[in-house]
Image (cartoon, rainbow, N blue to C red; front, side, top):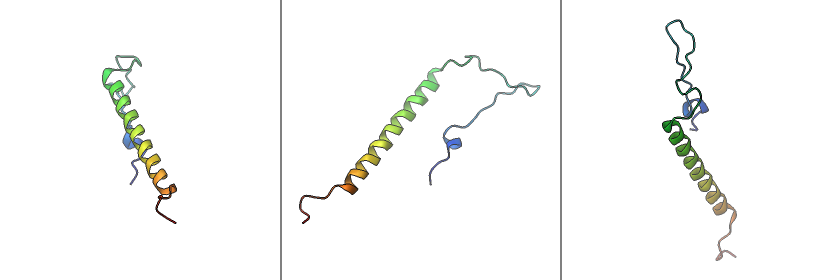
Length: 67
C-alpha cells in the first residue's frame, strides 16, 4: 500500500489559548531537524528512483543467452 502524502508530511498547527495560529519562533527559517528530515527524504527518493530504474532495466533488457 502506498502511503498518502498526509502520512508522509503531517500538518501540525500551533494554536494558542484563544485558538489563533501561533507563528513558530524561527519565523520560517529551517531548523537543523527540518534540514535533516529534508535530506533524509531526498536520500529515500533517490533510492526509490534507483530501484525503479534497475527494475525497468531488468524488465526491458534481454539476457545474452536467449535466442
